[in-house]
Length: 232
Image 1 (cartoon, rainbow, N blue to C red):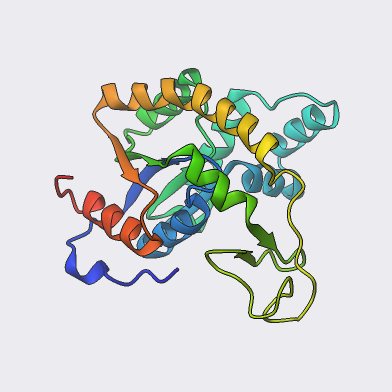
Image 2 (image 1 turned 180 degrees about the horizontal axis):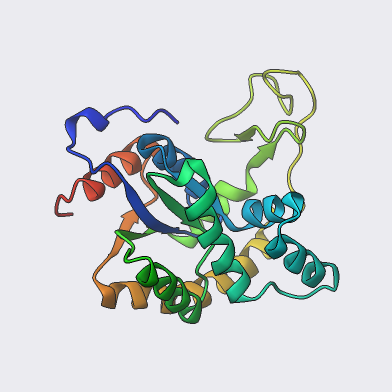
């Protein structure tokens, strides 16, 4: 998605934020655009873990050992990875967009403690809000080109040729977990996890809820207004 439209807003030079939203809400579209706008880093939990393991860092080794044993990586290791990125990842010099963390209030508190120690704090916690029924329609129609990750949608963004990638002509697939039954479980888990975290950030005064049922360009415009400090 283009980051156009930013010229009409007086934006800060840096940003530190969390982005939350259920699967299909558009996080994967908006987070990279925010990162591009601010020259900040998009720290998605899965990508961050894979990069740490691949780097062979001490935290990466600890995480790999836990994951190989089928365990969950501890909050301390995750916060340590975020801290390591903030301090050593050149793309984080103008801030960061956290995606997939925190998932619990305890994680949110540990993140705040780490930032407090650096005399920093989050600017925003953005929650992309959308009706579950609309998400089902969005997600069950998703098609993916496995090699590139390019995504399409049967209704909203269909390929030129049925079930074929526009660039390579190779077949598109539907992810095995992009079905209504699986999605219902994922949404239930998301709501149970996110409601307390959203309430935590609401108490902090930094929660911003955005209607994600809008077109991506309208969501982007709303986000820019939030970053510019305009009342919503």
